[in-house]
Amino acid sequence: MNDINTRLCELLGCDVPRPKDICPTCGKTNTDGKFIDGADFFSEKGRIDLLKRMMKRDDHEEFASFINPNHSWDTYLIDLLLDDTGALARAALEFLEKKGDL
Image (cartoon, rainbow, N blue to C red; front, side, top):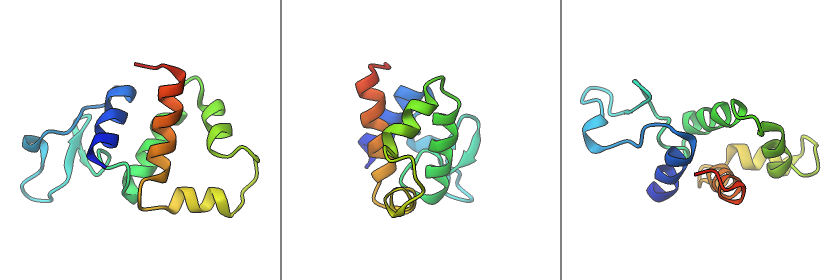
């Protein structure tokens, strides 16, 4: 899980969280200057953060087709977005690595 989060941060240009980036009060990680759960792309907030980051890319439509090849709002896509085991994070990582974005 951490290796996927770290690699996605590297590919997307966001801060890779380090232990000192954890807020002592709330326990959240500091990503891009604000304390959010965004470094954990497996969490609910992290998945939203990941989708926002992917939407900012020029190839966001290609990514949307990659994760939803049928272009329909079906149970596959819903399951992918709601999955707590990192299915969306793994799909994003696979897409980015195939694109060769380093």
